[in-house]
Image (tube, rainbow, N blue to C red; front, side, top):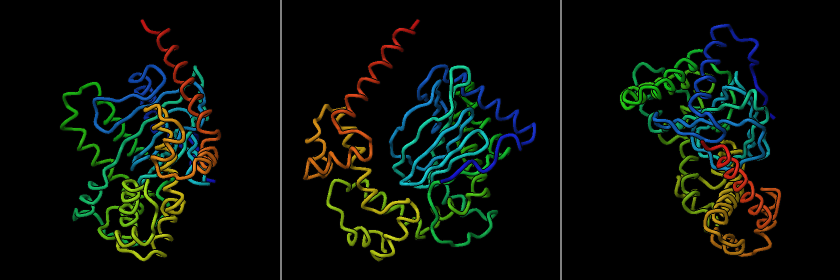
Length: 321
């Protein structure tokens, strides 16, 4: 289990001032619970006035910040906690589950996600001002680290662009680049550099993940995937688990079950049809594995999610001006 490595109380006053401004900006730009987009590219804001249950999804490379409150993320059997003092960094696509653990109406959870472009990481690694990259064994693609004042400052300048959207097309890419630069020299810089290194093991695992995403409904043949990324089956299995905390088969299962859940929610597909479309030949096996991941059989889980969505919509309508 991972815990927050650096409590907020240990930070200097200037850092706390930055952190409070970040929370105030997110509160102003959201205003109500839910996910929100900005005129600033690749930035997503979140607000919740109460703790939330687990939300499953596929998280792509991203920097995740908690400006107020606390959050918990599950990757396989591992649990990561982060709060105002720490950021969470994801360097490859990962099927995760997350939940807000600290929030109330007086002090709601406020969060920010900045999607990262691995191609920009590769470009930065070519800059002459960066020191040579030391090749290391692939590490877990999700970690929590202390949030520095320099990184906070860049994030604040990025969010402020929402007040001057005409400046965002020019200035946002420059600040994005600065944030990547800060991350490359931070505690998790080695992890990001591995993704940007051409033909590294970490980049090959990223290619294997991409292959899985496009072929998850087909029977998994490790030999085929290994040839696609130019690795031996044993090396692929070892490095895949080191990066993602799960085997390729477990990763495929997560993709299948999350897609089946989406189909049942958005296309009104029944459980048997959804399971078959994502690659399950046995409805009973699909139901067992679905229940193991989501905590309930497919029909009951989808009915609960639809009921929750209906309640949220009714509450929103009741508060509309």
